[in-house]
Image (cartoon, each protein chain N blue to C red):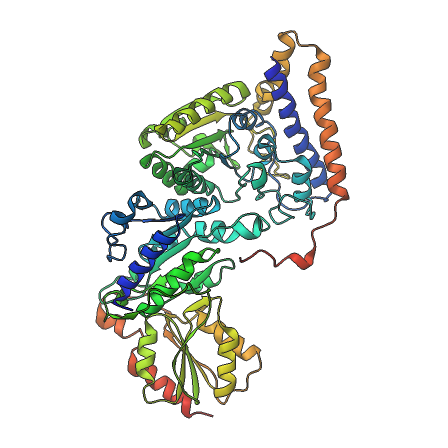
Length: 320
Length: 314
């Protein structure tokens, strides 16, 4: 066990991948010599030489070259500095990476890992604040995970790199330099998938992912809620989530992405489709459908905070 | 001249395959958008003859010519377009997006210019896997205005990666003249801005293409970095089957018929004293092969609908 921050945990996982898997490459904008704008890949260029390098500011070339290199036996790990920057190069994810295995009829695979980070932080502008996981969850062929603890950051990066599918690891910069926690770094590589039960309870099932899960944990301190953090969004743990809602009869989904077309809608729909008997209509707690302002006082009015989440969940727990 | 005779045979294989595809599209045995490469046979025949087995080749939706020249079996291509289980991708790729890794054909691409970064990745992999792989990516003149192509060229140049960018300039960016979409119509001149070799060459002569691509490959393998070759050629057919081609300029197709690769090769061979029977045989052999491939492809079973969800994930 080692005491690591979230950023250090990602770094440790990357280091282990580079050590244990000779086919891995690590690259992206400022990822090499500078060690990443958030310092996540610090020291890795020095340790692994030209397998860790900086690139031009060219997201299409970064992502596309990773797909091509993966098709030819490498296991590239690339960084998209902010998830908002995916949008200039989404073609390489949706039209290229996601199709490699399927359209080649299984002849070829594209085992690349794309690390990114997203979400709002104080002062971040509208082009550096979005939560875009739903885009990728709407793309069959792409695996997606979203850790929020140092241990999960370590484990999920490791699983993603070992996975033979294109996999996106969505981190969150507000977590990078949080408190250090004990992280098991000698464990086996876990298969992709699964969830984390963050709180036991009987009155309501709360499903959440990403950094906002920390707020959910705080908000449910005095509620009889079962809190499920779905750290893997594809594959999604449908059976476990549905079983929990069957037991509690109430469902809330909390995410930092905006409401319409957010993955929370899919979670609600699947539970309802299964005919789960509910005591009260499901609840979604999400950012309203708006752009995100830079001023903290404005952003704070939109992004669900602990009292907002607590009110929504405790209200739900009492209904029906 | 025996090289040109062999090239002519290979060009006929492409031409006659495309004509067969056109017939099968007309009869609705093949459905969907089909982009034929008729008139653009010399580039792939010349270039693929100097690619090695470890080298990568990424093409576009107008890529049947490159697949054939690379050695993909005609029957596998036809079966793919016909949606048969025996197609090179079991019917998942179709006319515009098939691949055959077993034969060194790493795929068409239906997004203009999008394969250029993939080729960069193939070359990047070669830097680490000891193959010394060269990656050739071909695209049309229209793709020269795509961001992904610019990014790929700069990325390859910055890291001295062995990527041969081949631009087949047929004058038409789909239905729009390329010379109206750029200020400088000599696209090869852009190479200089990236610090790489750029050359505009006769794309209707397989020998010229072969020589120039061989030189570029040799330089790239020796660490000289990428190159851009602009192959001047022509598309004798529409952008897609069904294109009314109302945009054509007066006399354009008549002039093109004089300089298109098969006409030129036949003329040169006759002038050099090759017997007419040998020249004709290049065509008839290819025709026999295409006919046999089409019969077999049409006899093959359709792709099995119960497999439609397979191979999405590992």
